[in-house]
Length: 192
Ligand code: HEC
Image (cartoon, rainbow, N blue to C red; front, side, top):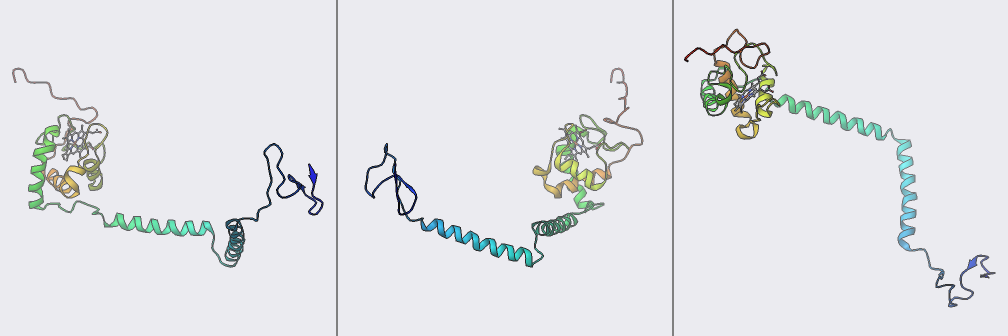
């Protein structure tokens, strides 16, 4: 190793083109331009950021909270635009459409009079998932884990409201029906 007396630094080569040691050499290149540009740009950015952060009320938390407020607003507007209740209550045309859907699809599991078979009775006082319009709508659109398929993709929301409007017109029973806790099916009539 030789000491470069001019710069006072340790050089790998005594003179510019001298061979290196063990194939290792050290050159004295200029710093690449991309490095300097990035370096000074980040300093400029830091100064601007610092001034902006200090001089204005801006904070990352504040920006986040403002975005949450906007999203909450948008979500509640979207919810408000959904019908809160069945738009087809008592609408004869819609009920007739709903009746067709009921007979083609639902009656197989819930029985034509909705008194229950594989699926529970939908005319008794017991509701596992509730019987407000939004609850019924969700049951039929998205299905329920105990074997109720989701019909939203096949029927679309409009026909789901129609079939629910038809369901409302079926005669109700006071007694607990199929699927209700504590319900015991009637003993089969002999010979029948
Ligand atoms: C493949 C059989 C099957 C078909 C077809 C079917 N259901 Fe169901 N349904 C079920 C079963 C099983 C349940 C009980 C689900 C549970 O307990 O999680 C159920 C539950 C329900 C409930 C909830 C009852 C409660 O107590 O909360 C409603 C409402 C309902 N079905 C309406 C319909 C309508 C409307 C259709 C036609 C679009 C339909 N179902 C078609 C099997 C069916």
